[in-house]
Amino acid sequence: MGDKFQTSYKADMALFQTLWVKVWLGIFAASLIVCPYFLSQYQLGILNEISIAVIGALGLNLLIGYTGQISLGHGAFVAIGAYTTALTSAYWGLPFVVTLPLSGVMAALLGMIVGVPALRLKGLYLALGTLAFGFIVEYVLFHWDLIQGDMGMAVKRISIGGYEIRTERDHFYCLTAFAVLATLCSKNIIRSKIGRSFIAIRDRDIAAEAMGIPLAKYKVMAFGVSSFYAGIAGGLLAHYQKWIVPGSFDLSLSVTYIAMIVLGGLGTILGSVLGAVLITSIPHGIVYTTDLVKDTYPVLGSLIVDLKVGIFGLIVVLALLFEPQGLAGIYRRVKLYWKTWPFRY
Image (cartoon, helix red, strand yellow):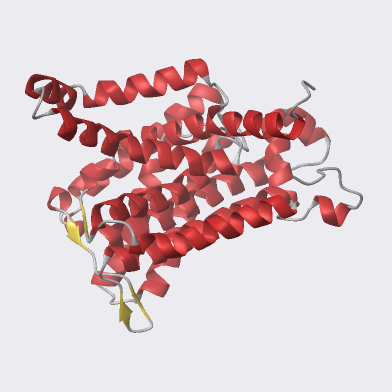
């Protein structure tokens, strides 16, 4: 599978360090290109939801997993991105290539504003502070007449260079491209000075400050970067759903993103992707199971629907009990096993 021991700094900092990784990424990219022609509209819709979730999960993992700053307000920044896109496209008539970056920038600015008072908070106090911000955003969304409150807002379709994206297949290629770009950007951030500073602050902030890392600068930057990702995810979500309501961005959305990075693996880019795939797929899996058994066991089918939230929570708890390092931890163990097989060490 390739030797992981590097002989130069350039090789150690390479984005794709082994031929094995490059080959499998090539196979994965090819499968992404051809798979829409073999999947149904419903299956493509699930993959589109996963692509948007990956972007939001990457942003939250940069904040919690890599910097150690707990946030329960990630859903609020997704909402800010979604409504920024809706307002700028509806009232100003701006194109998609302008509204989407604006969504990320607006969320990042508010994220850095939230990050400033959060400098004096840690742990549960920081979580409560971000939770309060989420409640404030939710209140504004429900009571601001400009965005029509709980009636919701219509959002235009994605249009790039005069080409309007309408089908699930077109959305798949567009959203997947953004998810891949977000993943590559996250990987490069972690490999940079900024990412190393994030990790140092997470591991021991006092030692990081003693080494000359300005804590205030990088903590606020972490909130800004994380919120930018959330804003982009919100903008894409708004265009994809074509109708947004405040109830879609409540506390449960923030908890869902936290579940993604915890089950996927905190502090890993791969964990963000795997967690987004798992958490997004679980509700659809429950619905699929219900459809299979509703004719044979109608009582059991209705019971599964009633216990949908409980089943989801049970899956999360069992995963945390038996695999605290998440799906990324399983991947690392499997990879290590094949690299050392047939030897034990």
